[in-house]
Length: 341
Ligand SMILES: Cc1cc2nc3c(=O)[nH]c(=O)nc-3n(C[C@H](O)[C@H](O)[C@H](O)COP(=O)(O)OP(=O)(O)OC[C@H]3O[C@@H](n4cnc5c(N)ncnc54)[C@H](O)[C@@H]3O)c2cc1C
Image (cartoon, rainbow, N blue to C red; front, side, top):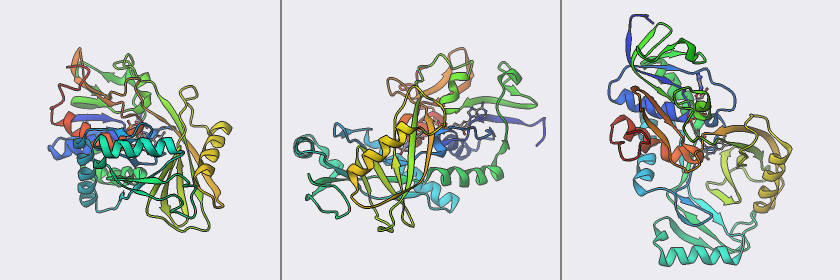
């Protein structure tokens, strides 16, 4: 790549946030240089990719409808563009732990408009491999994104359509007045570093409060596949070929990508509360979510330099929120939700 070339944007980080953003920038015919060296503990590489429109604990919508519509529409369009399947649209079955939770959900369904997302109830013991003694509910639209696959195929596409530097971005080599990094020059730069925003001198004052998550891949030898996601304390997502993902834990203290005894124990206990069949643990992995105390994403331009931006804080539900937020940011309809403008 030529050192005299000037880009419209440098994007630092090609996790879920950076990937969605670069797709939106390319749609606007912008030239982009991506910098990422795929650091340990990045959230997107371990995320289960669950797309769940409601908060299952309180049985209320998690996002406004436009977020949900935009998420499904965007991933379907990107599947076409990248000619790969990574979105799996399937029901989420919320299994009730006790009669009180069952009553709460039925009340929300009947009296609080939650029939928008609850598409019916299943009798107790409807699934012979589950502990579903107190009925369950079908939640839609829901599903899961194979995030790693989405990132990999996007990277292959970006290698043809953008420039890509496999490097750890070093702030000592960045000139914030000229927006240049080493020999690369740009109009603007947007940081999408996930929880590592804590180390970014321009944005480390933002209220990021990262949360580590551990997640387990299991094999259930007696069940090759079920085309549903089950949720009761943790979720179980089918991967195919007898494999399932079970997650996840939340830990604000330990921000390493090490798996822990406590994390494993938590996942096992919750899993055994859901299924009543034998299973084997195949793998446990960990990553750190870019969560924010007040759950508001961290998106916008730096108050002192409008050429330096941030797209971060996607939290524990980035797969659902990301497409709407990225589109809003790139298309500048962001004033009302940005923290900076
Ligand atoms: C265990 C677990 C389970 C999860 N499950 C779900 C789920 O089911 N559904 C859901 O919606 N969300 C889930 N999430 C949350 C989801 O992963 C995040 O919302 C999302 O991935 C955040 O993406 P990001 O791009 O902001 O951050 P990241 O994925 O952390 O990406 C940041 C990128 O920036 C790069 N980077 C950082 N600093 C530098 C630097 N200085 N130089 C170069 N590159 C740099 C990193 O290498 C990385 O590639 C889960 C998270 C975890 C940890």
